[in-house]
Image (cartoon, rainbow, N blue to C red; front, side, top):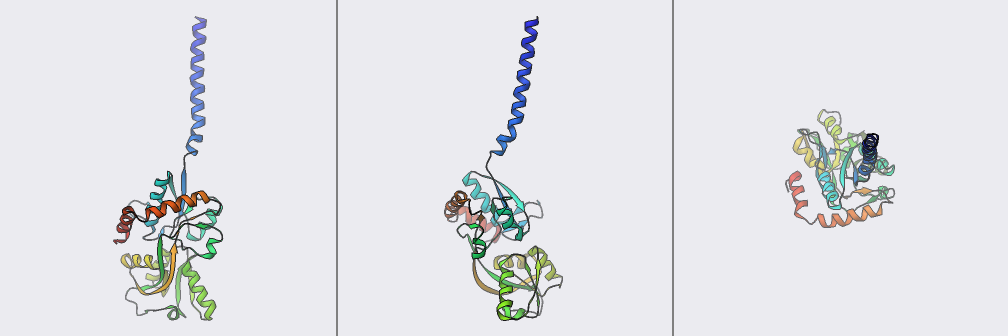
Length: 258
């Protein structure tokens, strides 16, 4: 009886230890799974925005990065933040990649690494629908209050114009273009300068009109840390292939109708 009892106790102890080991190791196995933390500012339709029905972040950039991640064997975690916080978050390793309609510029390329371009854009001037104010260029914005999003090439464009000409434009800076367009509709600013494809989307869904497109020949790219060369090469190779597929055309059709 004593031997049998000891055997039973031993079996129970082994089972308990086995369960404890599994519980202890579970987080380790979970953390070893490849997850791509994607930073985005979801106020830039049709590239990234929040779906009113589902509350999820959707858009061209989101579908694109998910398709690339799937091809490369990653899961995706979408992390929302203000646009001007994306590069600091990337550098501080809070995210692994930026997918947020980010224009490739020399200044940004000094601190992050960009993929090959996947989209071309210009800047557009947007006013309230029905407004008598119809600016056709930056000169027409002199003496006016103009909204832009913080950290964008639109802000750079206006600031460089003011600095180079000595003319005054009251540049009002917002954390998101959604807020800027809302203020435009409410009559708190005279115009908003914004990337042309996004301006076209706002023209479709909000009470605003495009009065002029300013050729800036910008290119959007995904961004990673400079030291993440392996990830950059993976993304570039996947992008080169994906941009020539019907899947990419389906994404454009889904969000742009083209």
